[in-house]
Image (cartoon, rainbow, N blue to C red; front, side, top):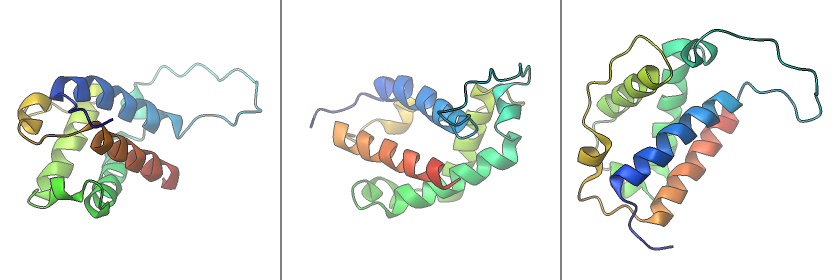
Length: 133
């Protein structure tokens, strides 16, 4: 621990993890071995489209912003814009109609000196948020 997480490494880890964790919210219980019916809808549609993604993102921004381990990264953040960009990004990545118009992950996180423990806290907060939803 203690190493700096490079922005591109963060993007490669964060985006798929975020999408998988959101998708896991609708998964079956561990004891159920019945095959799931085929669902040809996009991940975006299965997640509940923009409204559901926005609800999770809104709560996630609240959780990360109040977490003393990482809240320093969000002190001067325009929370409405942050939420909007996160929703746009997740929407696009999951097959929705959105087009992400924000900065690249590298550009967004340059100079922030995000360390492994910060990233771990961020992911911990994501897990807590998804457990609530």
